[in-house]
Length: 498
Image 1 (tube, one colour):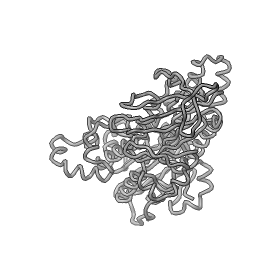
Image 2 (cartoon, rainbow, N blue to C red; image 1 turned 45 degrees about the horizontal axis):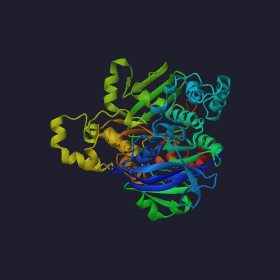
Image 3 (cartoon, one colour; image 1 turned 45 degrees about the vertical axis):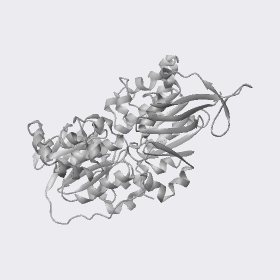
Image 4 (cartoon, one colour; image 1 turned 135 degrees about the horizontal axis):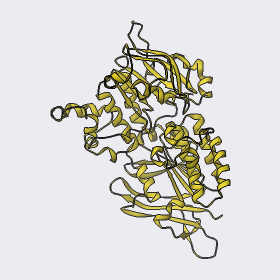
């Protein structure tokens, strides 16, 4: 099979992407990093043809097989141009985005995995066999007949990624598609990608994770819409100057100082008394006023179900759940949701404000929002949201910027209990530092439950850690003792500091 090359030449789009040029060979794995809003996702959409550039072209080249003069790539090799209409780009370049919910079309897991293969003309029985193999490979065995909507965010991401990879495109772009996965799930997807590399598939990983980027062949860094080829990832990421310039956190970076439990007697805020939530979660726990609970564990273990139970999106099928001394039921759901605020994994899916400012201060009257605008803008700056960004429609922001907006909106409502589901998802190094600083600042003032698969995100601000596996809390211990449980945490797919 002839090797293919994507040639990106002088690509510009409005003021977001500026004069970007590089060659991407089919055998090559490239990591693309940069701060939130630097233009990474827009560049990905330009390459795939989802949007058209203002200036520049994306060409598909193929290894020259005859004596005719061919195009030359940056390494001097000669290639022949290949006709490549925009409407046919999906056959060559696949795109896996940050929001798997938007990319599922099948009514079941099996239908999702088999849809692309059937459209490529494969035999039905062969497709059915391959679907079973894929379900096992990505950890969804036994869930083939379930709707994708019943899966956790990490499970949906695995499903979408596997379905697209099976169509065997020449190139694939993963835009933070590995971010919401726990370590075990990420390893499963990397294993699938490795099966395609180096002979079949070129890969572009858009990521904020230096550990993942270090596994690529080459590193591209993006700032203010421009791309710099940094060469070998390990060499570039070792430079503190480079990390600071491009908003990259240090590998396994831990922020701040250890939090300490306040020994003063505190009120019980939440209590699950032998509660069962269908087949997703069984829990018997209590949380006290001002505690910060880090909730860790693999995808699909029941972490999000736990958060949803606090505001009554799920009511127990057995047992009793009490909040603020009252049994939660249909008669007090509204009051409970006023006192507790949930930030979901994909905040861009539920924004309703016309501007970022409107979104964050949606609960205020127009008069109050206007009269306190200077004060409100100072509040937004604590989350890295500038006045210029505050005036934009939320849909114009990058994934990481949307995450900061969602966090600002959650804190602004001054809840007594804050429920955070993967709050660092898609954040660059600076954004992560800002959020951790804010969490440390409110530590002890409100009760916080924070779901993550990366221990480094909560280790220095959490009081306790709960490990959830297969719908049960299997470990509950003070965060300062995490090293005593390292082996158990890593076996569950939790990313731990070195």
